Amino acid sequence: MKKILILHNQYIERGGEDIAVEREINLLKEKYIVEEIIVNNKNTGFLNTITIFLTNSNYKINKIVEEKLDNFQPDFIYIHNLWFTISLGVFKLFFKRNIPIYLKIHNFRYFCTRSHMSKKHFLKNTFCQACGKSKINLGIYNKYFDSYLKSIFVNRFGKKYIKIISDKRIVKIVLTNFHKKFLIDLGLNDEKINVIPNYLDLKEINNSESKLDNLIYAGRISKEKGIEDLILAFKKSNLKTTTLNLIGDGPDLEKLKEDYSNSKIIFKGTLNNHDTLKHIKNAKAVITNTLMYEGQPTLLCEASALGTISIFPDNGGIAEFFNDDYPFKFNQLNKNDLLDKINLLENKELVKKENNKITKNLQKILDKDRVLENFKEIFND
Image (cartoon, rainbow, N blue to C red):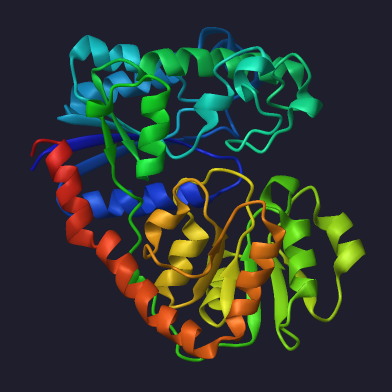
């Protein structure tokens, strides 16, 4: 069996990407010998953090990686997130040893942090669909974080990251064909870009015939997710007995709770994954009004696996996980179309028909053997 060394830098707040990496590791272990270097930014230490920011390399991590390379001797390196503790110095180690490198790009942060000037970040737009930031709020400098100092460091990281991943020795993996085209448009070699979605074990999720009259949103409560327009559309809808449940936390939570919370609009705050899935399983539908490009929408894929309808904007690669003729996708930023799709939930026959189709369609896309075959192909195994 071939051996794979996987690197991933977890986020401080556990998110969908971290869950996806764990699921994929477990999947790959069925066909490969896998070892991981998984770190978190919580306990990096002040002095070490400053050194990493200044050099875009982490001596301690590099030493751990070299020891792992010596002892494990992997056939492949498979990288996920590197910001910021693992950092970019590991690439030099892998290039030096001439080990095949595979990099899975889950989000579009590299696009937003590739320059110190906001002009290159936003191009001719005033709003970035990759990160949800507004040019008006940033000004001339590309202030990606609230702190100028952190922004300087992440932009230095982003500029170097783009340069490194343009190297033809690195095989890129993205989640959708939309993201592949996005990278090609930035000038990356399309022959080195592969599409493999995040694996979702559909056997762990059983759909439900019993649905409550609930509409579910689960995610960050913030402007770039279009929550307020979603709430306003729901209030205008014909769904007189339906309840909108919003699961999650974020900077706009308290204000939206104050302005809109009532018996039909319920803010549930943060729930664990098990409880969130339980709500999705029993819901009439899930909904998102995101203004951003999405990689692979974990919420919507889990909903489809549970036989629950999704209402979403036809933006980025989201629609690739649904049938071509899926009737519940709406034109992004079109409030009237969003309202129409919410009202379409009153068509019980259509809802039942789509409930049966979405799970079967997702099973084709995320079939275990198909995903493993995709990896086998790019690993030349």
